[in-house]
Length: 561
Image (cartoon, rainbow, N blue to C red; front, side, top):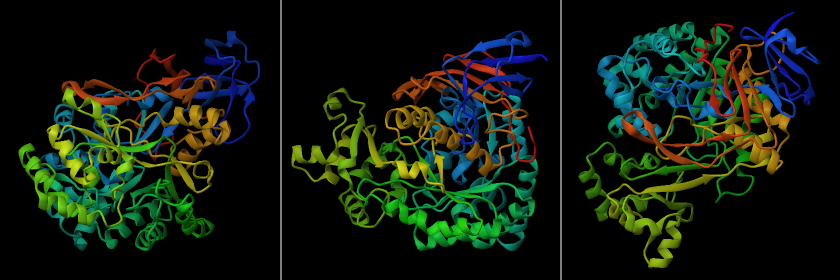
């Protein structure tokens, strides 16, 4: 017997939740050939001594927005630095395909407003060599990938493709529904992993108008869900909860509708413990969906394991997209934005809307100054609006606008709005992830959630076992989304593997770099403790350095490799 690679002397945690065990792992081509004790080194072309280290399946990040970044960054950094070997893109109803040439500006504008991407970076980095969904998959595959990439079909581009500008204004007609259904079926035939959408009012698209997917009728959603039911594969991802951690009656009704019509997993955003909420408030949302699990459905609430926050400036105030008074400010010239922010009538309207339940309702203690452009404003850094308000004897809302205007609206604010606890992470009806990799890149980075989970939450805080954490990062998303032949360490599976040191694995602090197209700014998180990342049988990273070829693939839900 001869192998290409053998990993010797490590502890295997296979992704099933089973307790770790001592074994060698042998690879042939892109497959795991054997998992057994004492495989002789001479039987392999390459032997790696991993004594004292853990070998487990490559992590699967199911909630990313690398749709544009993957076009210029085949490694999908930072995710690949943290042991992630497969990603799912096209979430929250926004993306770049399908797209007619006339709709390119609108789709880019949607990503800018919903996912906080830089317009300048997108204009420089996206080359538009496709129209159809299948053409987009082929385009990213032909460039070379340092990551396995799967795609949900985002509903906004699909509706824009069929309804054009009217997609932002109305539901589809019967004939248009048939077109939507046909295109979705074609996307599934091309390998889509389902469809994604959002109903969140803060998700405003190009020019501050509603995203096309928010105009979808129940008839449309029912027909698209029926495609999944007929095929017996795929899933639905939906940004559902207007207030994270709470599931309203109408949100529960929509969730149930999608489950009944698709009979497929529906993952929904999201479950957080808001600091101002009762300690177990999120459990009420989970308790509502438990009977659906009992009936055989899978309504999985997505839970971040990283800290959850939002960074924004008033040039791109995406966090206020669900406020009617803010809608006219989106995508406007800077001088117009400044005039609005200085207008007492605008501030009064904002103050009135803060009385309604939303993600942000005036929690000034949780809102702080994160970055400033003008040097004289440096003393404000890391101070909350509440503390600054007390120091200066000013109303916090008025001070908020004064500070932003003093920095020509370049000042970035940090809003910390969600916490995670042990019960959320270990609950059988939650799906750990929600990294948002690729989104809000010049404001934050949470792509290192996998190493943060293994280091900070498992080793340091002992919130859950190492075996259970790895199961949540690997076989669970593989099963929910139908990622073929991945998620467990066993003979015959694809050789996507991570080798790490359980004593040093972790996520580093966020740091700014300017490595995006045109020197665009983004924040990154580096990892520690990742010894090797193996992608489709090839050693891609060793000790943080790329050592192998770009062996990633476009994942297709109807292909078993």
